[in-house]
Length: 218
Image (cartoon, rainbow, N blue to C red; front, side, top):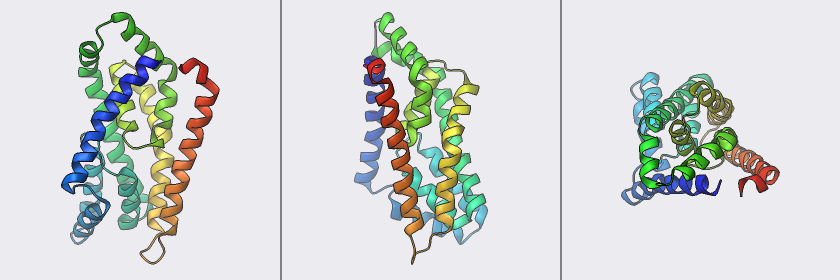
């Protein structure tokens, strides 16, 4: 399990560099994203939906504040259209990440980790704990992309990955889009409560899982 965690930490660090670069360049900030969506809203609702989808898909390659995008999707589009756009963009990023991991992940891991026995332990550890990792990945930014890539690289069956991902992402996106849809500039509290509640839920679930399986994960 330690080898798996080290590998995932390395992948997370790689994704994190895109966040740092984006911040340094002033890209994909909450203000920028809101400005882009506001401009798109001057054209049409489908334009806003397409931009939401593209932003969430871009999160696969450069760190984007996905929860902010989902909240703003609900704010600009309303609950159901915002939820549909948020779910579509998130699934597009996850499924492409899985496909890239499936296509290139094994070779990349083999170059990083030369020992076949250690690679086998990584596959076994993800087989044991990968499902929970995918369900709990929304506890922190970057983790959804990392777990999607690892699922592909370790050849997790796609239907299983998709089911686990949807089980976590559907309620997450629904709550975020709903909170955005009922929030206003004068009353942003639903969005604030949603952010706090979602992170608290996933962090608590992650803590309980780690406490339950702590010995196995060491």
